[in-house]
Image 1 (cartoon, one colour):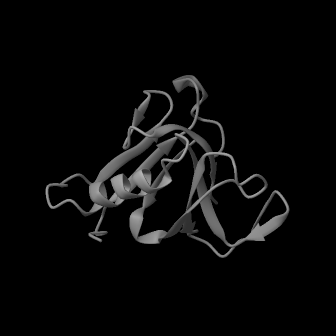
Image 2 (cartoon, rainbow, N blue to C red):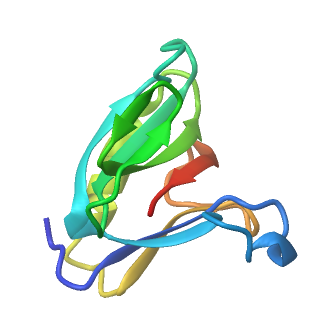
Length: 127
């Protein structure tokens, strides 16, 4: 993966004026990505994909019923389209034509998504 100075952008607010709220927008250095998983922790039938990444600090974050030292970005996706979303993100990031320093993966304000199967950014958990 070509990870030099490439960032993924996520924004999960409904309106631009709400963007100053905590955890609503993040630029993630893709070299910090640790993996992607499908389903919801508490309900695997929900069509969500979680991108796991290494946080920049050593703090721990309590989320739901477990503690993690990694950050997460959870995307809502079309039913049964997890493999397609993962493939789209990998191809976009590894493309030799990609000269951008950042790639918008999910932007709920502008309704811009890197894959046609991403429907929204559910949550951003990053510290």
